[in-house]
Length: 196
Image (cartoon, rainbow, N blue to C red; front, top):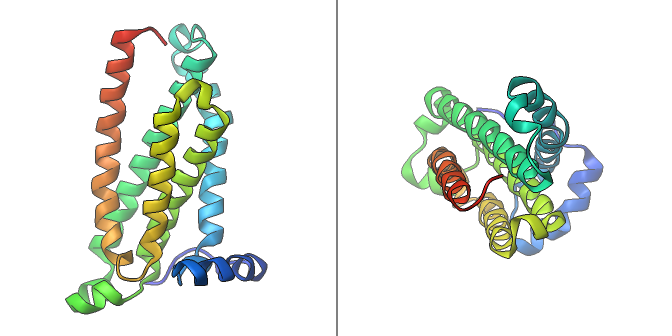
């Protein structure tokens, strides 16, 4: 199944290619525009959509939150959108990708298909965005969350090593379900210790 998004901008592809060659991420230049585009989408949700929508839907809670509480709330909004989007796209890819279904086990390990790579790009974009937010707001989220964001970005970017790319779609679906559960559990834990 082909990647349904437009081809990358040649200048971005050429800009990333040397680093991709050094790191062995041979297919990441084909998806750098999707990674950056999804990171931008998550930032728009975080900075503009989540605050406005939350203030309209639950003004009695959201408007009373201190700055760090609002940041955490907005992070959870982005995380939920990302989780739902990744889950839907992964299921769609698994159910509709005839090319992947026709592959042998060896081809699934060493092969490349555009649609799972798109799903991977959306996840890498999320963790790139997450990393930038954690760097910017380390005083709010702390060093453990910065370490988490860094490690997730690295691990998911390594999905562009061809030996892992196709399998990463399934792993993403499992990870996104875990992300929602972890987010809910973390929220309960932090709420029991202090108010937003």
